[in-house]
Amino acid sequence: MTTLDSAAAAPEPAAVCLPTARRTLRRLCAIGLPAGAAGFGAADLLRRYVAGSAATAVDVAEAADRHPGAWSAAAVLAVLGSMALLSGVPIVSGLARARGRVLTTVGAGLTGGALLASIGHAVAFYANPALLTRGGASAGVITAVDEASESYPVLVMLVVLFAIGLTVGPLVLTIGLRRARLVPVWVPVAGAIFGLCGSLGGVPAGVVGLAAGLAVFGMIAQRAWHADADESR
Image (cartoon, rainbow, N blue to C red; front, side):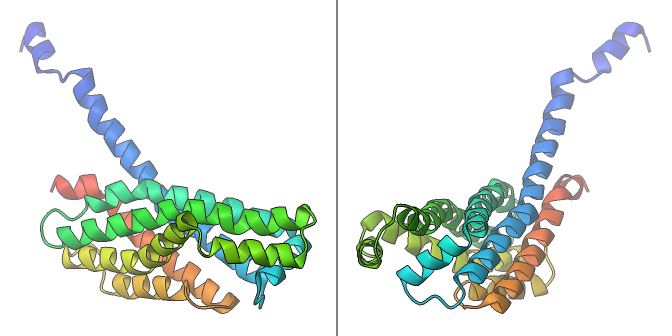
């Protein structure tokens, strides 16, 4: 083979770099899934620990005022965890190529919408009690603000999207991935547990929810990490 032939046969730099960049981006997003699940679950645990058995908005505000560091950490972890999880949703929706594709896409969409809503919900949920107590608001004012927020359209929309999407989304997503034979049979079960724990109170439910979230999104991340190798077979 001549030098000219060798030069002609060599791949263009762009042709080599593009798949490499795509694979790197996919793997970074895959890392965001378990990392986000860890942050999101840790935030939920901190919230449960700080709020405890608080039954009213005044109780929550007082609890947040007693533990400002933990409350602020929960807020930051909730936002960053949601963002990290959200970064992995686009790659998850493309894992199932044929069987299970519709369920996977719908589940990813529900989960992604819930995570977007979660960011706004976290800001409102954690900021309001901290700001009201820091500003010296009375119990009556705190109660009035809480009652007004329950009918404020934007907050209602965020809560509905967050609650429904994060309860149903991971379950539908994991069922789709199971139908595509991409995850073991226990993953949809863990997805259901993850969604259920979000509606239950207490620290134990938070611990189980954290473990379920890590198991679900860790397994999905593993499949996304090796997606390029699976496609080349």
